[in-house]
Length: 357
Image (tube, rainbow, N blue to C red; front, side):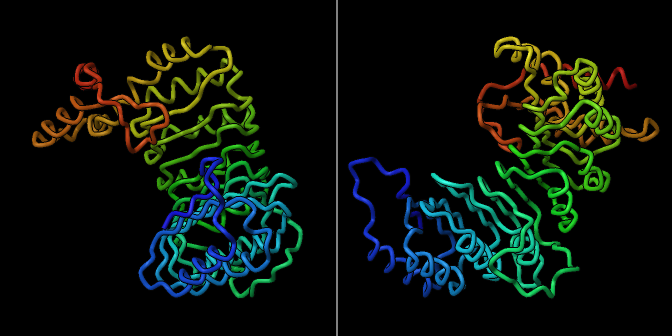
């Protein structure tokens, strides 16, 4: 069910509050609804609407995907925390996205509420997206039972807290409670130390790491890149809009690591001294070839020299290399959409195998 009132044309009247109340009541009793997208402006200004939304989330027993895009004209941390906890403790929801638009003050979740709810035994969340929502350290207005204070969450695999104004200490405390993370996205925060993700990387489980538009400096980035050559799990790395990319020595270290790494498939690291045309050429000549080789299966060619590559793998690798497509604007690292293929990948793949031999 998609209720997208936020992006309706101006001449389309808003859904009347009484009708929305009826819809939320129907959601409460639905036994078949698995996906709910609700994008609404100013609906939560009415206490009865907020209460009915919370009740619908708490009582529905079939929801698996819940995406809420809400605008509070009168910000209320209490309402936000109740909506969040209701969704997390529903016991069925696996994919939760919550984004708040506020014309007044930014919305925040209390850190204790966030951690206690997610680490409860009944939490089933595997993917969590919080956008335009801060994490406050003050005591929240909603007190969740704290029987999970010393418990980690092993169900959460994909975590994104974007535009949340989180600092390094907050992010560190959060990720420590989620040891099974495969994907982390902290776009638009105040992170200065990217090395806090080393534990997840050393376990070779982290596939996606995005720290776009943070405050990562040269010293920490150099330390981070020095430890990366041995990492074999990372597929996507987002570094753009960080101060470290103004350092030529730091960029040179990044170029060297990418040339030798066999797992990374997509890199976002636009450099401030390049305009768009220069950046496209630089990325193509410096990063695009090794990244495409990785997608084709370069890791299989760099095993122990004493172990020959099984001949039955060559057709698979060459076929994949011959169909390697370009990424389009906005593509995720798992789904390049461009129909044009890279005709040079097979050449570079075979050339690298000859050089290794």
